Length: 62
Image (cartoon, rainbow, N blue to C red; front, side):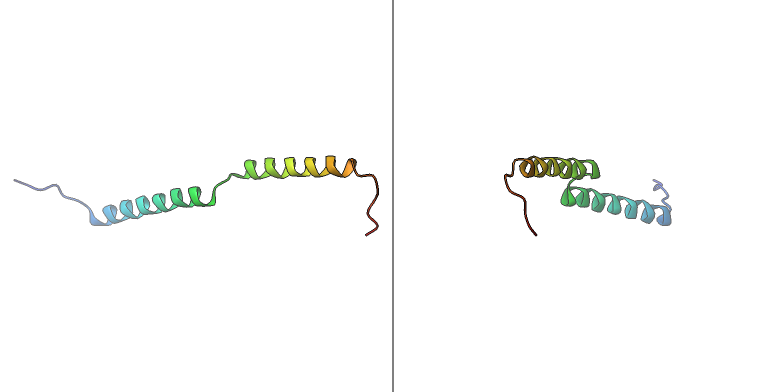
């Protein structure tokens, strides 16, 4: 009837790592997109804006 000996310092560190991992996962979900996805969206928006400007009949005087 002997209990398993546990190093409390290591146990606390492991528990803290686990908590940080859970928080990181929540942040990834909350903040969403990767850098590549953001760059793709920006490139598509720039392309659409350029195509729209090319079809314009008169120039802006601003």
